[in-house]
Image 1 (cartoon, rainbow, N blue to C red):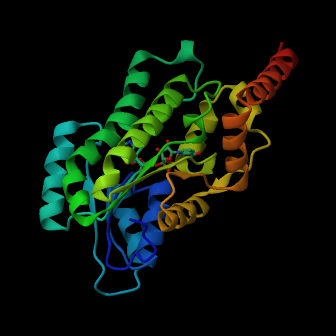
Image 2: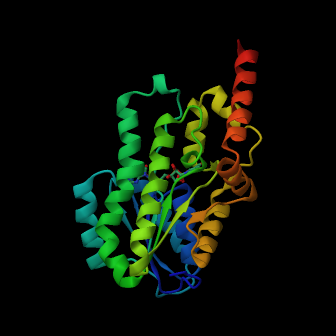
Length: 275
Ligand SMILES: NC(=O)c1ccc[n+]([C@@H]2O[C@H](COP(=O)([O-])OP(=O)(O)OC[C@H]3O[C@@H](n4cnc5c(N)ncnc54)[C@H](OP(=O)(O)O)[C@@H]3O)[C@@H](O)[C@H]2O)c1
């Protein structure tokens, strides 16, 4: 089901305490939705709830937070069962919780690879598997957050790209299965977005990774949230915020060899200069 009117809808947002998830929560609050956010850090959840509250347009709207690690299957099952009972069942689920560790493959310890897969991929599985019965009842909407690195294997992102490619494959299969239940599934693929994640990544990213995206526009979380809400209004599977992202997506689909050779050239130019 396409959603154009968000008033009275209940949205669950993992990673709703920061960045893209928080921007979606604020925008949904500003359109009259009830919002539940999930994340691990309590202080951050409390601050986010105040920001979301400030966007309300009706006294009737309700907002709450759930402290949960989405990679922990039992924790997710317990806390979401409680949330459905005490708050409300969801009409919308946005899976924005995510982590990254941009480093060359040989510098990524197994534990980091494991964490990235558990949060970005298994976390998505965990929330959906617990909320799907309710989303089927409400003919709801699921938005899984992938990345441009979910359709282009990016230098320095072996672990992250693996998790985000998997999110797209998972979402594509789920979309097909959910069609007959009128549950819509979209996948969001943002470019670089100005959030705490990007700031942390900037401190450890290999120089080659920086060189690849040096000319790309960095979007704001608000711009991405607007694309998410517009995307839900259209019901398209792929939500590609920004014209640059749509261009890159089509180039990769139609001319993968060209994308490869452009990025290879940028990387080798940097490596020659640094040698
Ligand atoms: N920023 C970008 O450039 C960019 C580009 C493409 C895609 N994305 C994707 O967009 C999504 C949001 O990223 P962002 O940039 O908004 O990052 P962010 O500002 O760091 O926010 C990440 C959110 O996820 C939560 N989170 C992380 N691990 C969690 C866990 N195990 N359980 C529950 N919550 C968890 C964080 O809260 P706690 O730490 O308190 O748990 C926080 O609320 C991610 O999936 C990311 O991969 C980001």
